[in-house]
Length: 149
Image (tube, rainbow, N blue to C red; front, side, top):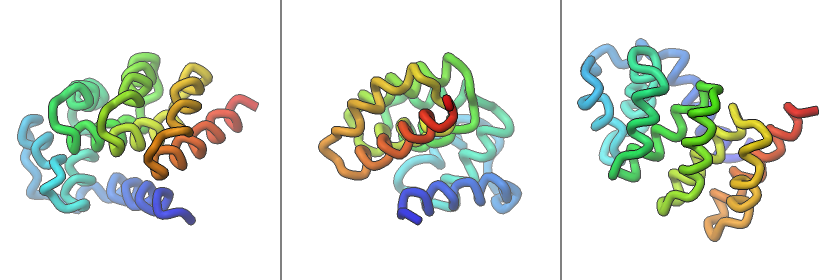
């Protein structure tokens, strides 16, 4: 299993056990601050799970448009649960982000929920100068192709 797949699996595990962080704040601005790179991975994953449960895709879409690349990255990752045209369009746009981690997680989430409309950005990302972005885009493209069969 690739390191990327392991991290994605760890994220899914954190979502499944979202009750692991009972001391998280309830308000969205505080939860979003917990997605910053200064936080540990468990806290970030639990915060994303709580945002998903309480606030849903609109909160993550808003975070995806923010100034903080770390928060945008976690938002792109968290959007993997929401299959909608609006989410797919936002992730496609995030595929052009300046930050490689945002591009990588946008590719990952497109692989989970995207349709054929995501294939052009994934083809571009498959040639990304950062290997981890390219690898994720190639994997995402294959997931979409398999779903379309």
